Image 1: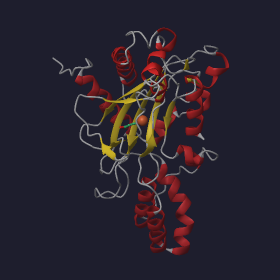
Image 2: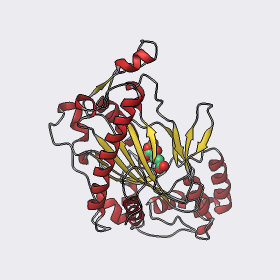
Image 3: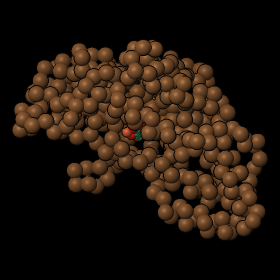
Image 4: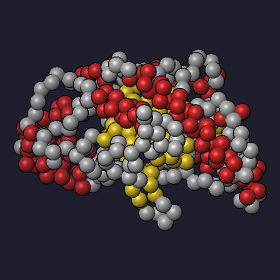
Length: 346
Ligand SMILES: O=C(O)CCC(=O)C(=O)O
Ligand SMILES: [Fe+2]
């Protein structure tokens, strides 16, 4: 029998989605890029590390993908420098929207999810997992509604009765080179791209100068795998790798504290929409990811949102509890999401 924690989703399923995720990211870059995220696919699919930075020359990696190798002496500093950038690789899927579902508001997000054929069972397992997360989140929201002094169904009907969802299947490369290898353990496509960019410099100056420049470059960057942010919707269920502590949350005193993984448990984040509904009684938690280990970390983050077209504003019961005035203006969830999706991609 499966071990189940109080949330009711089998531990074996939590583990299986992470295993499938690890297998997917371990595939060659050429394989993963078959389901490349693009505006035409409703921003669904695989996005490699640094895609947001390379926008404008989106096909550079494909154009130069001729597979030559470069001298290890300067691969180390260059790859290490890139490790310091806001970096991860992910596969994003959204609740599917048919053309016209939400008029102009929904246009950006219209599309079907892009699932890899390899590993087999990826799509079926993820869809099952997402359904279970949706049911669990609805139940948690009923508990939160009660805790706010409302009816358990406060977040149903027009608010979140037809909740939109997002699932981000994420990989964070480990620190390169300290594990005795001279390249990252997963093929994320940057290796060759950056080799060609620095090759002329290498020949002109020699790798010692490159080492020095890279060191200076590294020192000037932050070491965030995923920079500080809040999530957009109501709540997030993060299913993180069991043996790497990388997720950090900022507490009320402004200190970053680690959220170490507890096997079988989710980290549950409050999102921006719940902050608005609760008139600030719930804070959307600022968090970040720093993978300082040498291992490739995976996590699967499920985001439970409001209805796509819902205009979110503080609930009366929450305004009463916080001295009547509304602290936040109304926000249409779909607009908030689209603006975030477009900024992430640019
Ligand atoms: O990987 C994690 O632990 C957190 C991911 C996250 O915060 C996000 O995708 O919004
Ligand atoms: Fe997040």
